[in-house]
Length: 330
Image (cartoon, rainbow, N blue to C red):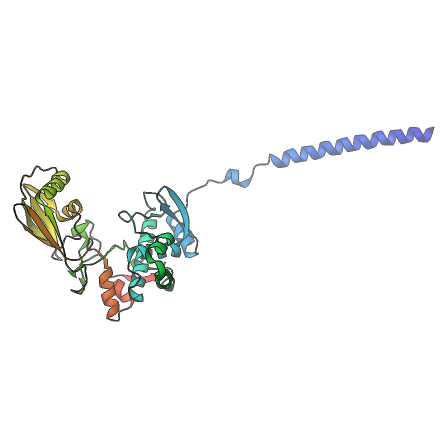
């Protein structure tokens, strides 16, 4: 009987011990899960430009605005799509390399300024940032030539991987255009802002090139409709004259009726290829004869091709069009 009583007491003691052990463990768990973590005491700050640049140096991704969404992309893969959208894949390798470095430089310039106000580091709207051609569009447009064209562009991009154009150690605003005849434009005369590396320099376009000279004719009605809407005028006749030129020889300002307008604004209103134009008018129509294609500032893509034909390398091409610059790693 005594042994039975002792056993019962021991069992009760075991139960009490187990209860107190469980109670202690529960208390410990409560303490652990409510302990403040280091993250609760950290102030989270957005990365600055230096951090963004360092991330790209390490080969990380950039944020590209693709219309209604922002996607992460490898920087060099993004540059391939830009080059495909900006230059002929049949150009010589050194000309394509020059375009690749210019496109990468412009990307870094945008990042250094806080990114694109359309969203992300940069967007794919050509009138705002840079042109962009997806792989799907490349396949559709290039067809059987896709592999050769893609390979040419990819080689140029990866052979210049991480290289940009710098002025005083900083990435430049690497503007570029299709072609200029004779000279490129000084930035201040087109966009304002006297950038020392965007000066007027000599450039070449072969007279056989289809961008050397183009003409476009507007009927009286079409011309008047476009200029009256663009400049809030009320012209009844074709009344236009050139009143000044830029230092590169392009049209700077014109008189339309009694209103003075910039040639760049007229180019936009009429969809002209460039401001390097002359015109002939009659009572019923006006014909513009234009040389080159684009705003005329910075790298000329056709000029880069001509320099490549002369044996110049991509660094020589870039430092010619961007005055006082060097090509260097990010």
